Image 1 (cartoon, rainbow, N blue to C red):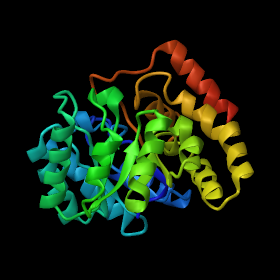
Image 2: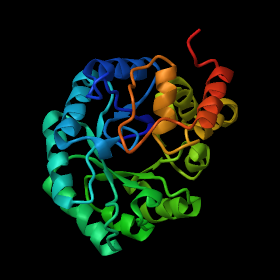
Image 3: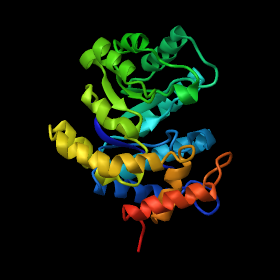
Image 4: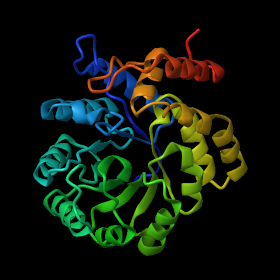
Length: 294
């Protein structure tokens, strides 16, 4: 259902550090023009932890309106509170989202039974295609392939964004789930390895600044043009993906977008501007790949 190059879109703020609606519209046009296959508002890259509930819903609504049905919108609606996740997911469905991205509950570290019950509760109460987002480094708990295989039996659990970095775990997901679920890479630095074991795309950070390159690379691979995809990965996508993690995401990518003249605005606390050394490294990388305005 969801495949290809999917961007985890940044949330642009205006000079008053409020949601920039016109900025969202411009970013959506930038992505559609450059081949992005679907858009995720309000993910980690969209600074969702610092958005109020009203702002969260507003960003989802503005993104859906700007996209106007041209590509799928997969709204980030996860939470470490099941009731809150159900509320946000219900809102996204009513607003017209094509799907939702549900991060594993963070900080409270549920058991595997708790994870299963959490996602099942959302799936049973809101009829919308759901992508589960497994990111142990941020959540403090890992969704095991066996648990995901159980969840894959639910009709609206359609995909997983895997950001564990563990290719063996992803291979086990494919072995246990087969075609019941779509595997999407959650780490730009290993897109090709994930595709090679059966993945169908990526939910990408670096696609915020090089959407055309990520889209062409994934499309080339899925069409069987493996050497072409490898060359694009090695020459551009991989090195720029490394740049996006000089500091905590989304600090570098939002900084890069701002330097490129894209709507971005400042970061919200507790995220702060890049350290000078890392900022200079990032700027050098952007210059190297001719991403800065003349």
